[in-house]
Length: 129
Image (cartoon, rainbow, N blue to C red; front, side, top):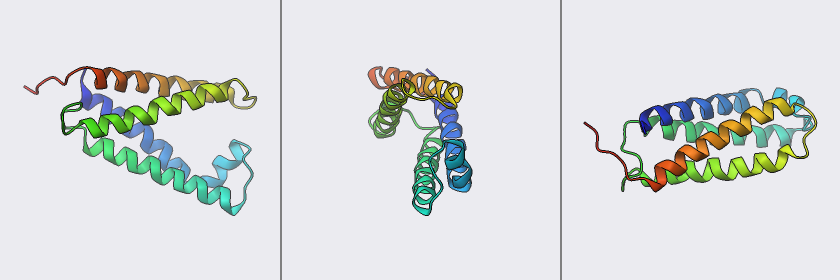
């Protein structure tokens, strides 16, 4: 598996979410019908900061050998994020009524990324040529 492509795609995916949540918290809250008070805005911006931090981590680690002794913590962090996120999204899909088509796409992406990082975690890394 080409881990550089995986890390770049996940970095861009997480970065796009992070920028959206950080710089458009009120719009996201209205779109998701979350209410629009100062605490919701703050929580949304903090969540965006987490996504941006994870995106930066993945982008900076894209040239490293993933899954080895030095790349294992980054791979494990991504594995936990995408697996737990996929389970949370799957649980939410059974009850959601508005914007479900967007959430299905979001859930499928999380499942695909989770499967990629599971594969990466259980297989030994390949040497760079």
